[in-house]
Structure formats: structure tokens, C-alpha cells
Length: 561
Image (cartoon, rainbow, N blue to C red; front, side, top):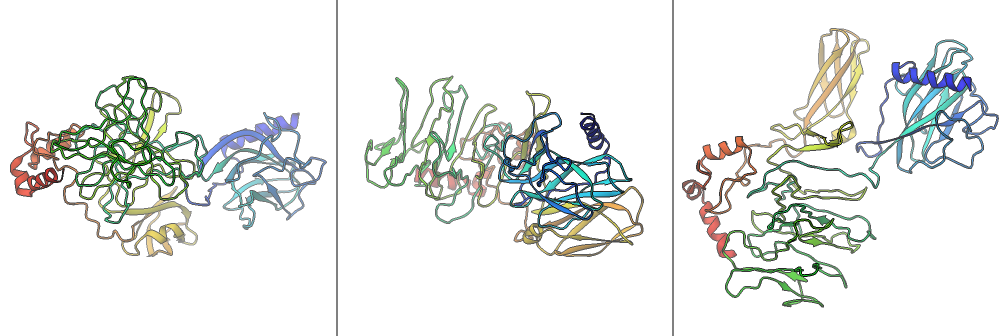
């Protein structure tokens, strides 16, 4: 009753003013960004409870340590308190992949000046750097909010220096992976046109077999219906939009669909009056579509379930074309959909290859949609690029606005002329010296040469110098014992000689009749006109094309078509 209200008020003061709390850090198990799930608060521990157990009595002994299981709760333990602040007692288990918990620690009537500290089971208590609440005098009631890492079994330890009663409320937990309702959206406003104009562009320079520019993988061996390794969705009203657009300048395949066993390499369906597959070719004697297999149409051979070939020399000739003719199609409609339900690790939902310098799979959209969207399960990767990842626009991560449902927040990645690595943090000088231990992950990927460190004293002026720096530790010197913030920068191994000035492959016209791409920004348009790629009227500068041999490339591509 009254004491619960007092504890709630104390917790509010601790959260608002930072009373009794120390800065916290949560180290994740795999180095990925943490996902926080809030709930409660719910009462987890109350040593005033007459029922003995890890969640109940008796009070702590001076110098005593108690192990508490927080993920999942042991719901059968009668020592779990029946009281809670603003909620009922724990009614459901926490997920097994919890890496840390958010808690409020209450010291209730401290027997002496003391502290309680919480830490992951299996580690050592360190009250100067972990989750700790201090009582300044006997009889004090005080609280502190804390982030406490848990061990692999979901356990934390609590240590008491002076003993007495402790109450612990849990207010949320951190996960080391997204749950089934989250995804990683990447959005932008990239105008269409020729070239690599997508929001996400995966570029792969590898010459090995089955190298992919973009890979979408369904990691489940038993996915639900209509799951897709790669799905292209076009909600536009334009007649010639594409759900998935795969082009190939050589003799390969624009879009490749394969299946193991009795699966179907390509499945094409249409509504009443629609066309499942439309094959168009303007070349003499060429086939718009070739389909082979047990249910093949225009069957030719047995190696390819669906094959579209064209000998046309026209710009934009397409071997296989899937068109949604409705301007208001149903949800999840697709111009081309590739579905792979096999359990093999090397299967593809949509497979586009290119033997030259062209594009394996290209997704285009003329409105504010997405050229290519990759979605994955919790453990999957939405877009995987083996090799370089390039974009003509900014590279952004997007979060929803917390206050305006019509807005989103897009922060762009830092850009520079080197393949940089970094880590940062805070520390404090002691007797004029501070040592920063280099994290294992940074050490494993960073070249030992070219390391730099920037140090900013906090709260007072100090002269700071770097005594030594390597991939094991950084030793700093200071004229005063002050707190400081630091950033350590390096260069990724294997990319020490990275040269940002490269041969032009993105802005090369695709044909002599190409026009200035509308996906270029005004600044980019001015540049490609100034350097002679295009004329001021938007046509291709043929003199430049002949000088750089692009006209020969176009002629060779036309011959191969």
C-alpha cells in the first residue's frame, strides 16, 4: 500500500533525476543492434516475501550474492511476489534470446550505508561500472534504474555489500534479433531511367559460377504459402511497369527460375481474361517464350523449366514479359514471381545472371515505389551483396516517426574516400593516464596501419596526447584527471589502397539513342553534360562514345541479341 506508493515515487525520481544510478552499457551476444521490448513494470523480486526462494525471502546477507532467472520466468516458483506496480505479476515467459533486461532496483530500509549491484551470472561484480544502487545511510529507501546483461541461461546475479531487503521490478528486455513482426525497410525517392537507378543496388564483380548481385533467402525449410526469396511488387498504374525486371546483354537469361525434384521452375497464373505468360519477340524466327518440363509450353529441351529467348536488336527487347494490366491489382500481385519451396541452401526464388558488364536483375519504378524489395525472416538477410554495394543516391536507414504517422525519419550513411572502420566510447583519466582496449571485432577487420584517435575532454580543460596506439590498446596521456569521449578510426583490411576515382560503368549510355536519365539529380545531370557523356539537349554525345569505344560495345551487344 503506502510502501508500494513510496517505492513507485522513488523509482520515478530515480528515472527522472538519475539518483543512485551509474551509466550502463549492454554488450550483445553477436554485436548486432539491440531491439528493446517494454512492458510492465512487473514485480520480479521482493525479499520481504515470507516465501523463501530466488524471487522472495529472506533478506540479503552482507556480502551475499543471489542468482535470479529472468528469461524465462520460473512461473511455478511460489516465491514470485504477488504485488506489482501498476500491473499484475509476471504472466508470460520472456523470449529465449533475451540479452539484457531493464530493471528498477529498490533498497528498502538499508541496515547501513551500502550498495546492491546486478550483473550477468558468470561475471564479476564491479559497482563502479555496472548496474548499482547506493544507500547513503541506514534506513534509506532508494531506487535506481539499470540495464543488466543476462547470461546464456537467462540469469543475473545480485550482490549486496551490507545486506537487507531488495525489491526488483522488470520494465523491459533487449533482444539480439528482430522478432517476427519487424523488418528492415530501405526506402528512397530515386527517379527511374536507364542505368542502376534502384533504391537498393547490389553489384557483384565476381566471375565465379552462381555469383549474385542481390540474394533473397527464405531460411525456413517449411515456409508458409506465397513466401518468396525475392518478390517484386509494383502498385503503379502505368501499363508498362514491372514487378521484377531482369535483363541480360549476353546469351544468358534475364530471369532464371529453377526447382529441385518435382517442383515447378516457373508458375504463371492470370485471372479471367488475363495472360499468365506473354512472350514477345520482334526478331525473325525467334520464340517469345520457351517452357520445358513435365508441363512445358513451347517445350524445347529438358534443362530449363522456363526459358525466354529473343534475337531482337531493338533497345529494351525482352525475352519474357509479365504484365499486370489492371491499374488496381489485388494485394501481393506480381508481374513475375519466383517461389522456391525447397529446403536446399543454394536454391533461388528469382535468379538473374549476366556474363558481361550489365545487370543480372533490375527493378524499375516510375513513382515513389521500390525498385527492388528484399524481405527476410528473423535470422535472414533482406539484401545480400557479395562484393561492392553501390548507390547513386544516399544510403539511408529509415525509422518511423514516433509522433507523426505520415512521416518517416531517414538518416544517411557517412560518406568518405576510404573504407573506414571505427569504434567510440567514454573513459576517465587516472593519474594522467587512460587505456582503451580495442574491441575484438574492430581488431579482426582493421588494418594495423593508419590508426587515429580523437579525444574530447569533458567538464574541464586538459592537454591530451596519444602515447601509443595499435590494434590491442590505445594509451592516452592527460594533464588533468577528467572524463573524456573518444573515437578510434582505421581502414578495413584489404582496402588500404582504395581509390574512389574509378572507371565509369554507372553513367555509360546503353545505346546511341539513349537519353539523359531522369533518375539523375540536377547536379549529376550538369556533370554528365559537362564531361561530354550527354549533350545539353539530353541526347548521347556520340563523339565521346566513339572516343571511349562505347559505340563498339553497343554494336557487340546488338550482335549478341
